[in-house]
Image (tube, rainbow, N blue to C red; front, side, top):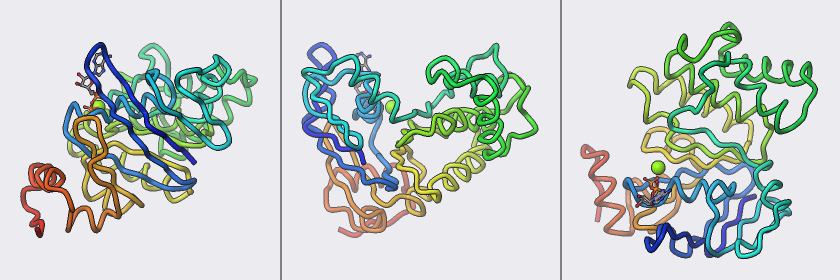
Length: 250
Ligand SMILES: Nc1ncnc2c1ncn2[C@@H]1O[C@H](COP(=O)(O)OP(=O)(O)O)[C@@H](O)[C@H]1O
Ligand SMILES: [Mg+2]
């Protein structure tokens, strides 16, 4: 379970997150939607303290951290509970797929090399890359690179995986294979927060959709309801822009 309470984040004078409250239950898949600049990435990064919130509380499972007084130990513990999948994959270019997945296990988690290797092979097979263990990122398609990114997150066996627009840098014909992998992981009951504009995916896989704009959560709810009968005008306008063919009732 992830629970955010009154998360506030400033960059200089620019308040990017305004008192965000969000709870994600264990095993739940939450999709976050919202226009560029609305604070989606910053919110994900606050959950694992890649960004330090100015105020509020981040709780994952039993561990609750007051953002005004986080200890180093708390921050480390929060980071261990989540893994992130980035828009631009963030793979080491000079490491193979297998080495990319092993890296965090050996360096951060201090697993023995053999155990790290076994686990990494297993997750790479799971994302359909069992035959690409020794390939370097430059030898892989964008979709394959992102699947390595997902394998790397899975290998950490986190309590939750945070996906930040995992398909938005991909060629359209590569989007499906990555969504398919994410869909399969969701079925295993891993808690996930996914920032994406893939409406079909959100509709099929999300238990809940959260719409953000201007650093606040404008509206959240069941995807069927949000996509067909959004309550807020801002949500309606946004959905109209990204899926102009849809007809939202007022
Ligand atoms: N490291 C940073 N320094 C200063 N401003 C930032 C930084 N990261 C993000 N911002 C600003 O915060 C706002 C929200 O950004 P972001 O969380 O990336 O939004 P989104 O992911 O929804 O597009 C934007 O106005 C952006 O310019
Ligand atoms: Mg973003």
